[in-house]
Amino acid sequence: MKKKRILFVCILFCFIFIYVEDEGLFVNDNDSIIYEMNEYMQIKERLQQLKEIEKTRSLKEQEIKEFDELYQAIEDYPRFIYSLQALSDNELKNQGYSDSQIEAIRTYDGSKEKTASASMSLCMNMSLQSFYYNASENRTYASVKVSGYWKGKPFMKLKDYVGIGIAGNQARFAMRGTSGFINQIDGSVDTPKETYYSMTGVVFDFDIKDTSGHMIKDFELTYHAIADGKVTTMQYGAAYGHTTIALQPSLDITLLGLSNCIGFTSSKGVSIIWQQIKTQTSYI
Image (tube, rainbow, N blue to C red; front, top):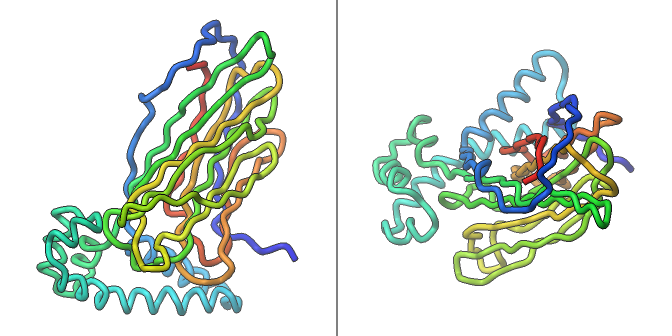
């Protein structure tokens, strides 16, 4: 049975067709930008969305379950932060907390402002690693890398997702391969599971804590793609789905019709707390 999707997110783009002479390959660091999202604020935002929906119609069964779990999470969050006060500064730093977060934990008074300041944050970075045309093969190659880490220990410690997609103007990209790793705080390294969406992209999924309760430290995931012919303009994007409740969560990638645009959807229970979609009109 096909699952219902929520939080459909897409950015439409009308391709500009240009000819580019430079067909060399080099690593591009110029578009490497770090974004930071706050877990507590994201939970509050999703809860508010459900409250707004409830003003226009009755919530469906799954939405009621989601509402109840999110509401309980907001109620439990202060107790979670108070529990962190038992840890030393070094222990908090080893879990990724910044100095400002530690200060907010030490002076925590249960207020919404302090809760947001002490809340865990996700830092994400997407960079285009390659985009070039091989004339002898008559094929176009592209690679996109996504890396990230949690500043602190998330309240919701379930399965999370990272999706990466690539689309071209003249041709669709197929998967050429993937690479990546998940670093755990205890020093171990895990390999994420992956699901390939034909001619669109790949979704990696991983538990953000192991069986011993150790949190992930950081991750780096790369999607390598190839297209037949000469693709002069492409769109690439990535998204991070953070599981907030246990309702058969998932993150999917879609290609939007003839426009060849990347979009991300998630099931109930997963919040897309970060995404970035960009276009590239020259080889790098």
